[in-house]
Amino acid sequence: DAGITQSPRHKVTETGTPVTLRCHQTENHRYMYWYRQDPGHGLRLIHYSYGVKDTDKGEVSDGYSVSRSKTEDFLLTLESATSSQTSVYFCAISESSGTLNTEAFFGQGTRLTVV
Amino acid sequence: AQKITQTQPGMFVQEKEAVTLDCTYDTSDQSYGLFWYKQPSSGEMIFLIYQGSYDEQNATEGRYSLNFQKARKSANLVISASQLGDSAMYFCAMREALFGGSEKLVFGKGTKLTVNP
Image: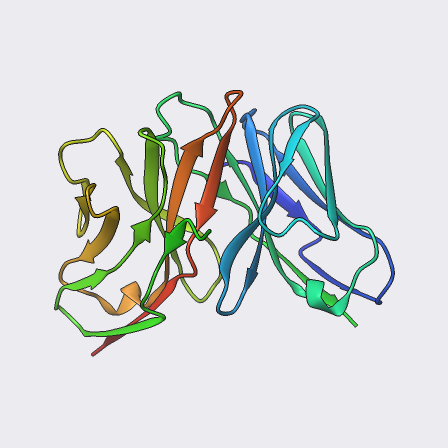
């Protein structure tokens, strides 16, 4: 199994508080992604990174920021959590092959509840 | 614009029968990769199969095959001889190369497959 760990696995937080989710990999893969999964919406890309300090927005980036100061860590921050950000968050990693044929490996997910 | 479309929210199949899960995609790139993932009720994401845009042969992995029709921009997953353990959510995904050398992986909304005994 790919070495990818998300923390925390579960979190309950109050509206308006900042929250940071961590994704840690031991595979030295170039690409890291944050997705949220909601019923009826599948997995939606929040932000992704293609190298240290290189990040870009996905389709649902409002209210989220990311940072990648080391290859192995990709942090997702909810600046001021809202109930609409209650979701399951997945981190994924993949290597660059040049031919786009490398699959992504997923973390186990973080269930975040904003009350 | 939606990049990946999975039009079947739910599908039912009898055990031992074959089932096709639909996926269409939208891209103007010539080079891209298409993936299928399985998510059982336990929540983990399991990679099933890959198809490259330049691959002339349809991909196969055991009981999984990918019916790739490039002109129609479709990449349907075929599961032969369904088993009870195939009951899960199935996601189609596309990987695109972006300007500057980065790559992005986007998913469809998924299809929930139920295999009946």
